[in-house]
Length: 257
Ligand code: CAA
Image (cartoon, rainbow, N blue to C red; front, side):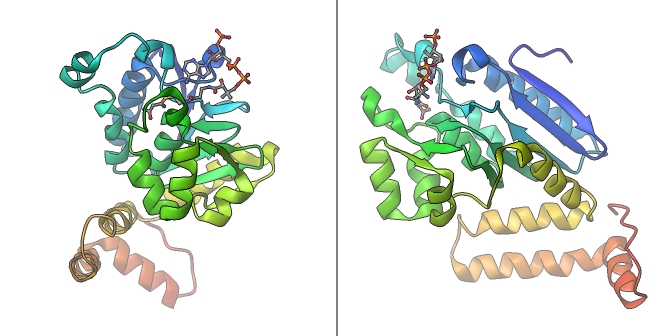
């Protein structure tokens, strides 16, 4: 499939999507959203793909929703079109999705990175929710996901001032899983994705669902949900293979069944 605003590759069991609007620091317009939805749907449907990396350029993961696209819209345009609601589909992607962030991840860019399962950042990464400086507030989940990720104090600091934080601060705050040297970002993210893709897919998808449930429910309900999923994995051949391989001191040969 030919895309205009993203580049899509598959390497073994790993998908790589690169946002590619260099002229606008990868600002996220409707075209990027539609193409990203299409690319993720294709990876969802491809049984051979076990995990996906989402990245941007060295200079910008994405510098936010496209301000020039929104500039002249009014409330009724926004409301009737439920503007930007389609971005939430990224959070509904069922396979592991890793954000590899270099440069600016601002506004919608930071929010899209937070819709991914975890973020690996280059030392050059800069995160922020600068919407307040435009007279608006985050609209793709920033007030919710950033607050859950870094707590109220830092979320308020970033969202109310619109300042940026660097990769080291983002890692200290718990927004970022790993920080790597700039030249290593894509290799590190692809290696993490390949490692996940080599595991048993039913268990990987259930692990993702279970961690995500922690943000939606009480501890008791979440623990029960986790335990029932754990029980259900004993219906898979991969559970037998994984545990037998451990006992026999060999590598497991997972079949995703
Ligand atoms: N939307 C549209 N165009 C953007 C953009 C955005 N979010 N961010 C950058 N661009 C464009 C610039 O307009 C510029 O285009 P021209 O060359 O045609 O003028 C080009 O990308 C390069 O940008 P700069 O010249 O500004 O680059 P810089 O290195 O001097 O500054 C920056 C980089 C600090 C990231 C600056 O571009 C900036 O502040 N961008 C906007 C960041 C922002 O406010 N993001 C939030 C958007 S609102 C949002 O995301 C809402 C939501 O929650 C859904």
